[in-house]
Image 1 (cartoon, one colour):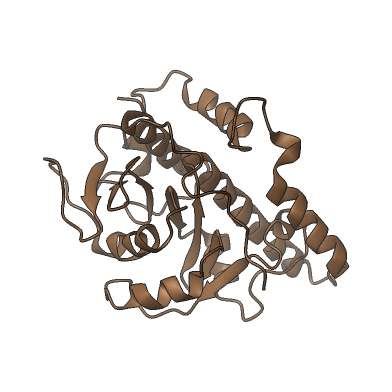
Image 2 (tube, one colour):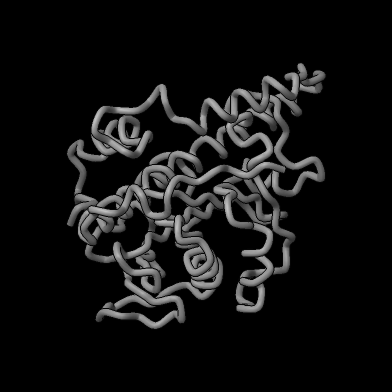
Length: 264
């Protein structure tokens, strides 16, 4: 197993304001809803408050992802304390998973967790994610696994989850549960999740066909993963985050007229 090699910790967040992180995080919630990857009021996306290793923003428990705005996000610390007045509380299961990752990984500016049908299905397969399509090859040798321990309410599980995640992996399959990605920016974490979920969907479609999977040689799998990892083909001059171009396209979709703005 050779998990993803991270860039310098918080490299993409260095000059980002809290308001910008709030807007990006609210946009990520709405995009997850747009792509049908939400689970009612459950699952979470969190983002570290810039310049603070002990504070992060997370969704208010009870709002649908499509209704989340920058101002409605709840600021909490790694002990679960709400740091600013809010009419909402926080889902304890979300706190357990996200506080563990933010505390252990300084490069985790954003953490995305989903319960999609495809993600839960692949997480429940003994074979896990297979290198059977281009999206899946992004995660070749770079996805790690965490055993199912029940609903994530036991704070002691944090230590085991962090141990399974390790110091470099940016994608995790939570067995019989779902998917988790982390990124040095909201954009990176969200786009990793979109691609991981697509990889799961394609795998299930192939397996459902009953036909044999065409194998990809190991050396091609690794070369493809490295191509994804470098981000060279997507880089924009002056932008450290190789996901910036795709992120701007996703944001333009959200800027179309809607009853309310994620920036509110």
